[in-house]
Figure 1: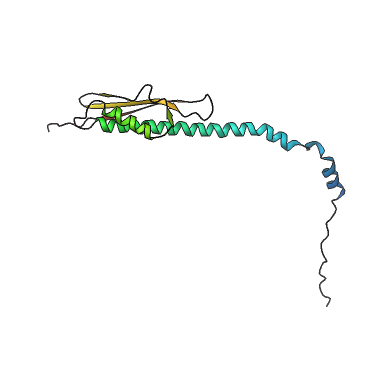
Figure 2: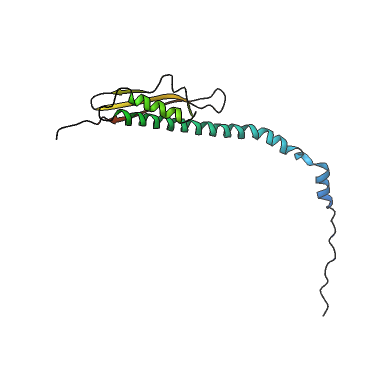
Length: 150
């Protein structure tokens, strides 16, 4: 029985004539990758910044709604003083960070009747793309705590 012959050290193979021609000539596609990247990159960056701007708008809406709900909760308490809701919303927005901008012009507002309270917070979303910001308007509504007869 003949022993299996172990191949010796591998040597680098030379490319065949077709591969050599492709490597040296480059063909019609030579330099196509940088051109494709130059065309695709602005679209990719536009989608990236648009998604970040959309996320900033959603966070600003959430911030405004939470501020309006906090204002309603403060204003609907039994015998709450006038302005308690606006003060609570203002404190909330100062602590919430800069996701909602220009919320102080006009300031948060609350309208109360004997049975209901409605608070509104306005502003704009934080601008990630220069010159692009979206308006934000959120309103919360609740009933005023009061004594009633059965």
